[in-house]
Image (cartoon, rainbow, N blue to C red; front, top):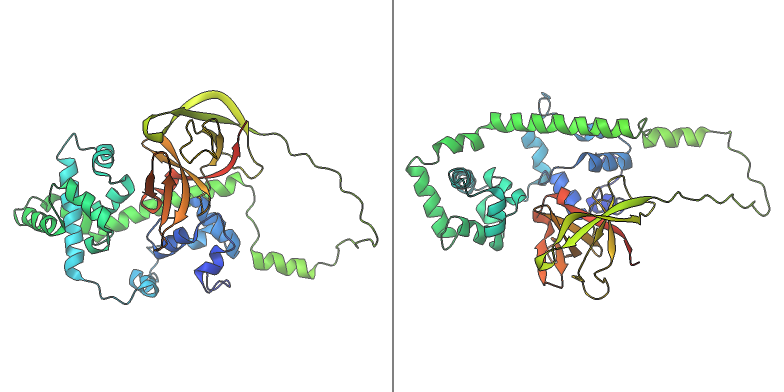
Length: 357
């Protein structure tokens, strides 16, 4: 769709779609991240197509997942042994978590540093072990209480030989189960797209049709020569949004309600809110009394600020890219580097304004 509608390179599309960062667009296009309904709507609007045209129908007899994936091949031959081990590791991880009542998803994130979105990808064999970075491999090893990746492989393969993973392997490797999950997700996504369309009124005309009619129209008023009349000033109604925030240890901010409200910028979406940062975690330029206006429907971009939700609390971060194009969130007090690409996109929100009063 992108190429067909005049964007031969992904970067050319990203340059006119600032609401969605290039890295996230790339992951959406490669199937490494699932687009939200609002993102699909933005992309479709720019391409001049209906949002539903961007959602694949896996039950269409003309759809071939292998043919779809071919343009994204990196030239490397798939290592079947690595793919098999990814399934075994997924089964072992599920077994490790589900057989220990105290080992919840929240505990795994807190004690082993594996965010829920990464845990989900491990448990669904989304990537082979050799494609995870060293930090993530180290966290997986700690979860299994082994020293390194070699010991991890030996442990998992031994569990499989002993039959300890049999009840989990089929849940991961069975294509019918995966296809059914895909159908369910697509159905839910289409419902969300429909709800967005209903809330925004009639759908926007396709760009080609709209431009064609505009070029044929001859009833435009003639612009008078000379000095144009001054337009009547239009005042934007004041919009206040609620403010949340109370200080927690380590620079975290709780989602505690306050009796405060703050004016929102004109571009703020319906879910925008104020976040009192409580402490100068990004330095003296943002004092603790500052209130950030956060929009959960906008994903942050490099050079901006992000509010990240962690276990129901928030952390304010400055956003940059590393040399490999990964999006990183930084904090000064305390000094932290958080890989934003490893978080659920719905937990990473753009800061679109600030109040220092």
